[in-house]
Length: 336
Image (cartoon, rainbow, N blue to C red; front, side, top):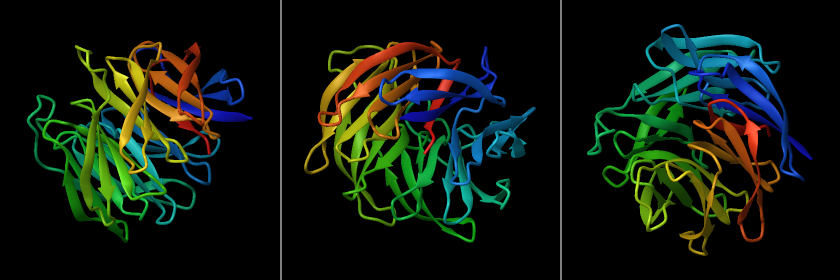
């Protein structure tokens, strides 16, 4: 079986934009890398059911989102003065695309038209700050759907997880959860079988296990570190992924340059069962293959991608390869 894997990148050094490659899910080997789309620093991307691709986009000094057709041809940009987005997601039911703007501290909704192009539907400005030196202003890092189809955002700058209802393309705030002060809420994933969410916090290298009672109502169940107890030095967490059976959770450490593996216990709390080197520098994103047998880790600063075999019974990882070169990679998307 083969997966098509897309890589979003920075274009500060050698990268030209979005790349794609073939992943053999039996061997875990990546091959056939091609330069797919030229775009300035498309650091995050997603693909809808009609195969339109949406990525972080920029035009000269303006930043925002870019839309491409199923052949990788540009449909349009929706940009404004200043920094581009850092995260994009698709809402198939409402024909919307959502964006998070880290530098501006904004949440955005875009109308998705029949041809796949986009236009701005709504924009919400976050306010506030946190106690950490990196929290002088809001930094929205994530905007995606909850299991009950609310929009949930993670704001690293204000330690907040905010939930919005969406009515006619407009964002209506319905609830807010505050993570630990200075934690830096970054990304969140949800269990399918239980009312549980896992929030990865960048600035204090933790995962908060949250009870999710719907309508954006979160409460803290557990906080667990992503680092070994004896580790001293810089670290910032990055990606968080949950296996399809809700039994194992994976998170990446930048600085420690590792993936930490957790077992999801009967009450959905976490038990750390493995920490494994990613054999590269700054593993910005990780993702699972479509069959869940392979984990792919992409490195921003060492320009290599590492693959791991994943034992579906134990959740444990074993490295397969670490010499597949992709420049400045910060996003791994596996085509569904």
